[in-house]
Length: 497
Image (cartoon, rainbow, N blue to C red; front, side):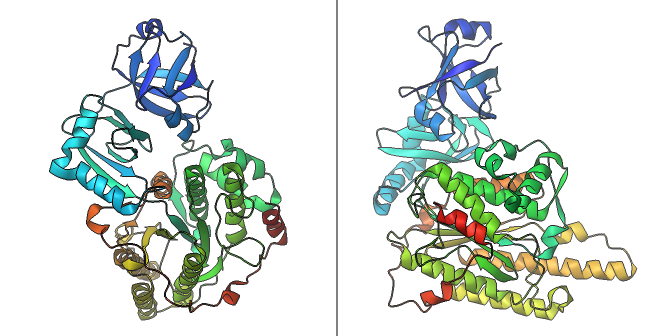
C-alpha cells in the first residue's frame, strides 16, 4: 500500500491519528485500534490510537501538530501505517517543564495531581486511553500544563489502563556539562554494537561536516557505528555526546551546554571569553539564532575538545577542579539560575600521575581525594546532579582468570574496575545522581538521549528552596579561563557565528 501523506492539525489528541474510513476498512482497522506509524522521511516509528473519519481524504493521515513538530515531522511526510499490538502500560512517569512557570506554583499543581493515589490523573486519562510514546507531549488543558512522557514500562510504547501506575514529577530547564574520558584505553577497547540500528549519516549537520578533514574522527565514528558489531569506546562516547547535543538543541529552551575532556587530568574545557566564544553555548548566544546553527556549533565544539588520542594521565583530582571552575564561572555568568546536570563518562579508574603503573594504594588515595572534593564543592544545595556512566570491564566480566602473569594482570584489572565503579557510585550519591553501566552501545545511546531531555526532581527532594544566591566574589579569577583553541581553524569557525 502506498504511504499516506502527513497532515498536521491542532484539534487532534497527541496520541491519535485520523485516517479515512475507506482506508481503515481496506487495512482491516476499526476505531481505537493501535497502529505503528513509520515516517519514511524521518526514519522512525511512533504509535497511535486510530480514528476513522469519513471527512479525511484517502491519501492523508492527520496527526497532532505540536507532537509532530517536536519529533521533526512536517506536512507531506510519507507515513506507513501498520497494525500493532495493544501493550498495557505498567508504569508511566510524566514530567512537567518549568519554563515560564514558578517552581513552587508547579510543585503545588503536581502535589494536587498526585494526591489520593493520583485519582485526578487517572480520571484525565481514563476515558481517552492514550498511547504513550517516549518523549511525547500531552497538553492538559484544565490544568494549563504540558506533560512529557519521560519513562514508559514496557518500552518504547504502551497503552494506558486503570492498572497503570502514573507519576507526575516536576522537571526544569537545566544546564548540561559533559565530562568525557579520552584516555588511551578509550582508543583500543571496544563496546558491543548492533549494526544498522543508528543512521548518523542521515543527519544534515553530520553529512555537511563528515568529509571535512578537520573532523576525521566524525567520519570514522559514523562508519563504525553504522557497520561494526563492536565499536571503539571513543567512537561510542562521541556518538553519545552527539545524540545529547542533538536532543538538547531541539528543546530550544534557555539552557547551556559545556564540555570537558580529560585523561585523569582535564585536558581542556569548552569555554572561552573576552569577545569570542564563551565556555557555554545556547541558542541566542554569540550569534547562534537557530537550532541548526546551534547543533553545528556543538558538533564543532565536540571535535575541538576531543583530540585524536590522549594517553597522558596525571592527578585525577584535577579533572574535578576544572569542572568546579567551569561550573563556578557558569553560575556567575548566568542571568537566570537553573539546575545543572553533569555526566561523567569513564572507562576505568582515575590512575593518578603514574597511570597503569600506579599501586592500588595510590589509586585508592586519588579516588578518596576525588570523593572528598566532590563532597566539599558539589553539595545538593548547589543545584547540581552528577550522573556517571561506566563503560569499562566490570569485575563480573573478569571473573574467570587464567594462571600466571596474565592472570595476575587481570586480578589487578578486576581490582581497579571495582575501585572505579565504587568511586563513581559514591560521587553520584553525593548529589542524588545515578551510576549507569551499559552492557552495549544502544544502552549508552539511550541514556544520553534521555539525559538531555530530563532532569526530574521527585517531590520528596524538591523542597530544598531556591538555588543559593552568589555569596561574595568567586574564588576563581576570570583570568584563569583565558585559554586558546589549539586548532585555529576551529576557532575561526566559531567566530563566524
